[in-house]
Image (cartoon, rainbow, N blue to C red):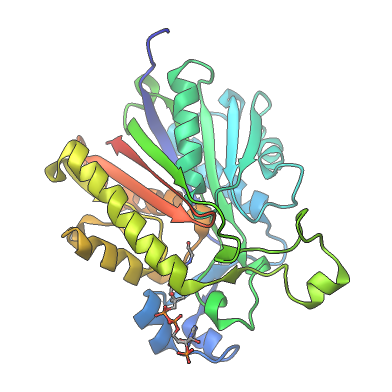
Length: 329
Ligand code: UT7
């Protein structure tokens, strides 16, 4: 086997729709309160896509920023991953529309469906393809327009989620000059369709008048099961990195922005202080596959990516799926 090519992250981008939906707005729509939402989730507001925005259009904006940050033209890309559970359509892949609109004439592309874990799973694939010389420059997008599959009559779900897009450009470490990819993990536990899912619209329950009338095209969630699962897995993933590299090596932990309480509980269980984390859930809610790359870009802007220190990105979501990546900045 040929020698592996070291991989780095050359650029990062983020885009959120302009319209904010606040907890006070939600109080007028469902039986909830600002106090309940802040206390249970840490969320104050989330962004909602405009009528003319879809997953590909918000992805393109995040991708353009990431490419500019990477000082790379779209023609240089040879692969585009789009991690999402809210593609423009079930097929063709949203990655194809993103590539076309970007002008990425030389890229292949496909979507990756692993819910909130999508970005970190796609990142591992991108890094492997670059490391083995099969690709040079890979754009990894995480993007969601979850507002289109939320039931704004269901207070269990509609208060938690928001829309947004994040992107990162992976390339050789030589070219990137930063963000050395060190490795990651992937896991899953199936049989969870009743825990967190969009029941209808696929081959199990095709879209029919009945499925729509029953609201089966909306996201359904058993919150407590997700909560317990997330606390356990998140603590395990971070502990794994501490055991492997040492706590002092970690510069910042950028978790999937699932719920502030979940993150705090998990970190308390392994004695990790919250000032080691970068969180923005208060402003965006849970944006599923978009949350990690959006937070990565913001952490970069906030000067939280410290030269020589580790950036740890753990995620988990529907499936259930989970995974993490570790980068040395
Ligand atoms: O990427 C993964 C995505 N999933 C998640 O992030 C969800 C993870 N789960 C959670 O974050 C929490 O389970 C929730 C925030 C969803 C709920 O918090 P909880 O402390 O587990 O509350 P609960 O489900 O035990 O519900 C307590 C009460 C219930 O009322 P009753 O049955 O006790 O009368 C709920 O109906 O809170 C009620 N409730 C609400 N009340 C006001 C549920 N949603 C709301 C709401 N506003 N939005």
